[in-house]
Length: 108
Length: 118
Image (tube, rainbow over the protein chains, first blue to last red):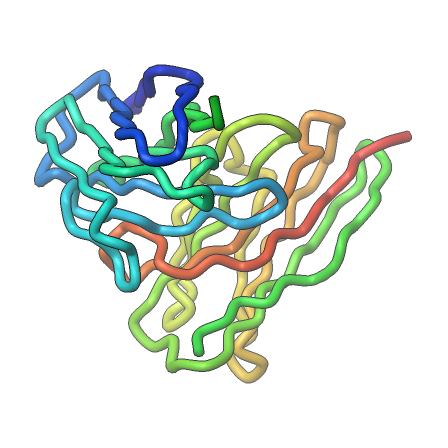
């Protein structure tokens, strides 16, 4: 199975700052079948990005993502207070689908 | 508005089984898959499998093969995930999620906490 490794584990930033989150795959993720989710405490994950770089419906344009093959990045250009959460990447190129272990973006 | 509404929290003893439901509303779910994902306390997300509600086809993660069964009651527009032979390691929040056959999950249920304790 494809193992996704996210880094850093925790990102301590202030509102207004830029956040850069990494997701590295143990094997090639074909056709950029990678998604990103945001999860807040006590809530279900929310889809942010699919197809490695396509924003889901209703997602603000401060969220962007890129990457291919084994290296993927989620960028939040200017952190808003509601962006402090845990972020997960997911690959759906091969079964079993797998998630990264998550990156927590916390307020510095 | 699309909604997936799950059944309430459960407390089970080791060795027992649990069946969690996920009812869809607000949109036709024709052509979609329903996946189940779980999250142990303080941990990440773990994919369990999917069901094609249209024909009942399923695909389970190998880890859960033999212990999980996903089914659909078409008339009730409700999907079910049953997990047997529970241990404390199965204590988690279980989510259902919709997949438009693209692989990513655009709508999620609110989650169902299953606690396994003697």
